Amino acid sequence: MTNKHNISRRSFLKTLGLGTMAVSTPAIVGCASGERNTTDTEPPVGKMTYRKNPKTGEQVSLLGYGMMRLPTVNDGSAREDGDNEIDQDMVNRQVDYAIKHGVNYFDTSPAYCQGKSEHCTGIALARHKREEFFIATKLSNFSPDTWSREASIAMFQNSLKELQVDYIDYLLLHGIGMGEDGMEEYKERYVSNGILNYLVDQREKGIIRNLGFSYHGDIAVFDYLLQMQDNGEIQWDFVQIELNYLDWKYAKQINERNTDAEYLYGELTKRNIPAVIMEPLLGGRLAKLPDPLAKKLLERDPEHTVASWAFRYAGTPQGVLTVLSGMTKMQHLKENLGTYCPLKPLTEQEMRWLDTELAGELMSYNTIPCNDCKYCMPCPYGIDIPAIFVHYNKCLTEGNVIREAQSSEYGKARRAFLIGYDRSVPRLRQADHCIGCGQCQSHCPQRIRIPQELHRIAQYVEAIKQGQDAPDDNR
Image: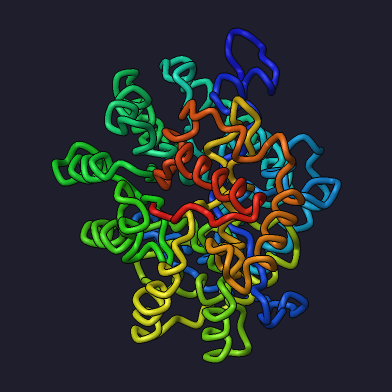
């Protein structure tokens, strides 16, 4: 970030209030047990499905490249492995491959990949003609240290510098509705400091081509921003929302502070506001379904992966402009290109089967609604919150969470849970070290009661270590 003080990248991240946190929009494709692997198949060139931006008339690729999971030199992802160097050569190769196959929407943020995403994205895209791609980035002024007019403007100007562009195609107010008081935080970040007016002015000057926001959490803020448009106070060119077949009808059941995607999408289509989709796979959960559910999908269509059903669901509604996917490896990119080159839309019957019947069955597993986004990180006490929840959910869907010591499967499940737990989460970062400070909870887009869930898992682990009945799951 450039201002009257030259600060380091580490200092810049501190002003964001992120420390070593990596913020994510979703999602890496994966294979459920028994799923057909199609990642070696070369996707066709010239077959990408596009959607028309109603404001500009521009054709936007239905697959959008989320630049939050960039590959590292040790074959990892910069979201999980941010201390390692990003493999810029691989980023360049994947961006080249994506553009060759018709992808033209690239989504980043000052907060992604430990603050390195915009820089690496800028290097990769600068090798292409400017008219070949659309850049989406965000004003990620989460920390109160960045709420001043000067700091927020400096963040926006730094995005232009890092991305090596003179204008931003799609600029988002990042994470609207987050925090304990979503409305108050929205006003502090964008209204009291005059930043929303500044961004509107930048749009009028052509430095921002499309202005929108990404929504997380407090529905009062979402409704308020749309009412601003209804009242003629502002025009939103697009809005980014979470949409997938589980969240369509069940987001509020998963957590009462969430909002069903059916409502969010419906409110946007009423106003002809294009929707940009995040979390089509719910952090990978819809690519790694419990075996009985994955089997149902594969029986219906053995030629496509479980993940492709979720991507097709997110891409089928005509009000969707693009569907974002964070793609660390070339095979992730190839598989997703195979889904959208071209898109085979779901039928209305298939859509309702997914968001009603299959989603209802998935709800019965009572998993923790963690998308592994890492908004809750870093924990000041070193707890690896997402890794704990991911392991618990995995064991739950595989039948390895059993509470009665007398069960014939108790011993097998107990071993699988405890061995996997120690392999997935270092001992000093496990749930029993949570002191309940609650710092994580206000940052969770899914409104998970994180300390309570960690204490519940810690009690479960202690019980099965002793070979005893585990406490009832009374969430």
